[in-house]
Structures are given as structure tokens and as C-alpha cells.
Image (cartoon, rainbow, N blue to C red; front, side, top):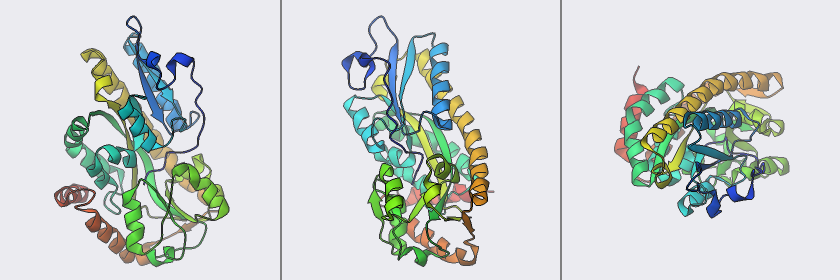
Length: 336
């Protein structure tokens, strides 16, 4: 359910020898170690700018021993392509949503279970408590989880009026084809999800093949989805979550000192991005209202939405994440 994954902006490589998949993109014996990093974030977006700043800082602090080459804007495909290419050795690292992370460590999708974590303070508490466990799961899969990142409050947007879950049954809501969580949510409602890739959503909204999408306000503005939408929910379903991962064998090529620099600079960049997201998502929400998007208060039917969310979480338990993990996250999220 994660939506900072958008337009196919072609990243121009600075030289042919650095193209992903080329053996020469690996560091030469007398040159820096090059980490090839893929992202769906457009280069000109806030996400893209923070990535570039991270790269500059990392190169400086390693004194040129290592550097990060960014392939932004979806130039390496969708998140499924990122995971496949990392496993094939064609790229080394990626910034991905929880959906992409779930392709490597499926239980991590519990963090986006609908209605479970809806506020940042809950998310911080849960991730702080469970971070080591998730890091170990990534280690077992051959990856290093460098840092987490956030993408704002995930809420429903639509071209048509809605107020209660049953209103979605007659529509054409989109569910990312690699996201079992929101697809499960729509299944509980009884809606028929339109399962296409992220890069097909804008066209789907134009042709009316899709009429409802989950997104943060910030992302709806950044990728221009809002221009095709008329209504947005006041209440959010969950939070958009992501992170940066790198292949273990690439990480191991760095010296212990440079490994720590990579972790440290990634964490600093992510926390800077979190502050921007918290500010810009709230601003974008107000901007959308000012531009004529109708705010939909779901509270009169909140019990119905809560029931759908609870049933979805229960149905996903045992298939996507364990029941014990769901109980643990539920307990942590409920703490005051």
C-alpha cells in the first residue's frame, strides 16, 4: 500500500561503464566501491534531493573510498524489478516501500495492516521495539536493512462520493498488484480490485478504469493524481512506510568503518526526510482542500470501517504475518 513509487523518469547514467548490470560498474581494484541504488522517487522530488545529499555526504565521509550511484524515477522498473535485479547482481541497493520490503521479508507487512498503526508515534514505538528482529530477517534473506523511511498518512481518494465501506463495492478501486494488504482490505469489503502496477494508475484514472486509490496527500500532489480525483478521506487507513536495503555481499565489500558510515549517513538522511514528510503531508492535505478536493469525514460510519480493518488483519494473520506478531504489534501500537 505504498505509493511513493511513481513516474518513469529515465535516469541518465554519467558514463556507460556505470550502467546497471555492467561488470565495470563494480569498483575497480584502484577505484571506489560503487553502490548502485534504485528508487522510484523522481529526481526533482524531496525524496530525490535527500538521496542526492546522502550520496554526497557518504562519499565525503568515506573520503572517496565508496560512493552511491542513484537510478531514480523508476528507471530500473518497479519495486519487484528492484528486488529481482538485486538478487541477480544488476543493482546493489534500493529505496522501497513496505510492499517491496515484504517481497524480501513478508512479515514486515504487519506494519501496514489497516487500522493498526495510524499515527507516527505508534510507528516509532513499534519499529524501535521490533527493529532488531526485522534486521535479522533481512540478514537471513541476504540483505542489510540500512534504515526506515516514512511517506505520510495513507488515505482513500476517489473520483466519486463515498462515506462507508460498501460504497466502494460498485467502484473500481486500485490495489497494487504486489500488495496483498490493501487487496485483502478490498476483498473484505467485497470490492473488485483493479490490480495493476503503480505506473499504470494515472492512465487508469484518466480512462476511468480506476476511480479510487490509496495515497498520502503529499504523494497525490507530487505525482499529480489529485488532478483526476475529487474526494479524499479525512481519516487515514495506515501510514506509508519504506526503507533502504542493500545486498549483504555488497555491504561486506566495505570496510567496517565504511559500513558504519553507510548506516549512519542513511539514518541521518532518512530522519531528515521524515521531518519533511511530516510537514509536507499536512501542508499538501490543506492544499488539496483549497484546490477543491472534497474532504470526506468517515466518522459517522467509523464502526463499519473499523470492522473491515479488524477482519482484514485477522484474515492476513497466518498468511502474510504470524498471529503472534500481529498480537505483539497490536499491543505496542495501543500503548500510551
